[in-house]
Amino acid sequence: MRKLTTTIIFTLLLLSPHFRLHVVSADADARVRGLIRAVDDRAGSLTIIPRGDGDAVTLHTNDRTQITRNGERATLGDLHEGDRVTASYDSSSNLAAAIEARGEEGPSLARIEGTIESTGSGNITIVPLTLGPAVTLHVTANTAVTLDGRPARLDDLHRGFTAAASYGPDSLEAIRISAESFAEIRGVIAEVGAGALSIEPSDGGRAVTLNVGPGTPISLNDRPAELGDLHRGFRVVASYVETTLLAIRIAAYGNGEVTGHIRNVDPSTTTVTIAPLVDGPSVTLHILHTTVVTIGGEPASFERLQAGMAAQAAYNLSSFEALSIAARPLDGGDDCTVVRVAGQVAGVDPTTIAIDPNDGGSRLVLNVTDRTEITLNGRPARLSDLQSGMRVAAEFCRQSLVAKSLAARAARR
Image 1 (tube, rainbow, N blue to C red):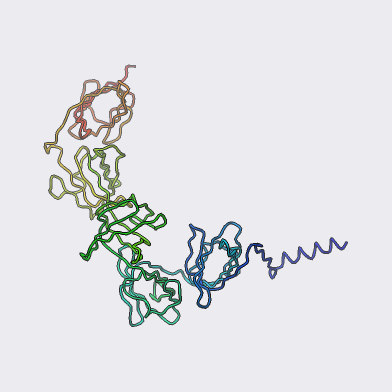
Image 2 (tube, rainbow, N blue to C red):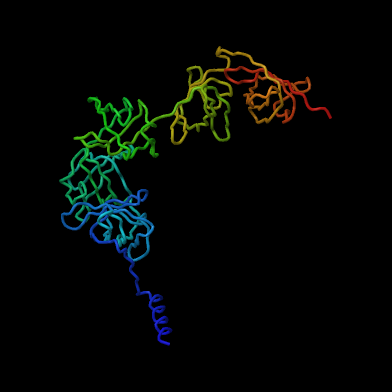
């Protein structure tokens, strides 16, 4: 009977909303209270600025770490910079056993990361890392300011320091500012080497060569990248330690290029597909009203581009939006080595025909223009009259893959 009574009482306690069961790892021999400086959800870590004058503490988490925010179960990604936090952890490994955070539940905040351009009159202006327009924020007595992980004042921050700020998007009032006294350089990549990056500054100064470690965050067109993805001529913004020239972060911006022949022009999606001269997949580019299109060196509209034209295009690597397309007219005197192929029709669309050669070679996709001569069973025909399985003989330019003639025969019934 006593055992049953005990079981009932324990069950009622578990069901009570006021009952909390705290589970702390036996290895948690240290404790820290303070403010969250940074959260790295990918690395599973957070950095805490302790109360008083202590150094910042970076703790690691795993699937056994107990995390709450404002009394509710949470994940590491639910925690925010500036949250008040209490954490217990193993001092030998800095593995957190329990993290209890409390923070604001107000509207979502905007965030900017970049370089301090100026401070004064209760304001701070930050030039973003993404090369967008500068943002000027109002700093109040309620703004939490840190410099190199320690509490600071606005007067402690100077032009050239890197900074991250959270702020109200409507009021432009800064909630938190975290600054680091690193140097910054903006310019153009001069050379990429093994573990090193040379940058020519945009202000005309001497080139700076930075050491790039395996942990240096690198982005290209706002996407994660590696040092090998960067090339000479790319624009770049880099923060670094002046004494060691060690890069802290690198943000690069570059354009892709493709040289080849236009394989397809699709007015319905306003796209152009270009097959490169060298080995590699075709590139489909989106045409905008800002895309500069020329044919034979003269300005032209997108509608004048045709399959088979030789073309060179520059485009945004992340969005595949065409910046410029320079094409040559079909009758512009391009070299044309006429090649003949016989086989079976493998597929037809409005501007191309796929042929499987009789000799067992790779499938061939030819561009078909309004100048292509097409016959079916010896009579004039249209490309849409041809069907998969028909026998076909084609003559085409090897350089542009433009069909000069297609002679098809339907299978006998």
